[in-house]
Image (cartoon, rainbow, N blue to C red):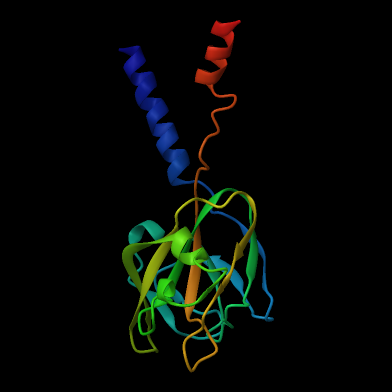
Length: 194
């Protein structure tokens, strides 16, 4: 019976640590076109863009509280665009794109296919909202977490007739795939072969 209590207490502790884990810290946000960015908390009715009063609503619950890389409403774009920022731990990168325009996987990319090959449509949305008329944004997730350190998002065509790319970005802690070198199975196999 004591073992059951210990197991339950351990599970509760692990669940608590996961639930109250610190957010991914994002720093040193910059691009090659002098855009302006801020790291903020992704929250219901928070600001969609850091330089406008537009709100962000209908955020899927699992994304609330994540770190958002808040762009300006006039975020520059183009295939020569490069955005970099630092993360303090491995993290998945989400990009939410304006539904009024061509989807990002259907736009020109430099290098070719970097977005199409690296991101998947989550089939979830969030909304750019009041005082702006509501606009749905499609949410894409990186296929693998980026390792701790610098994240670089590459060039993608802006909206035709508008030199901006209309998006927001947020990050979620993720685990990198484990290398088999040094794990218990490999180590045990090495010991047995000696």
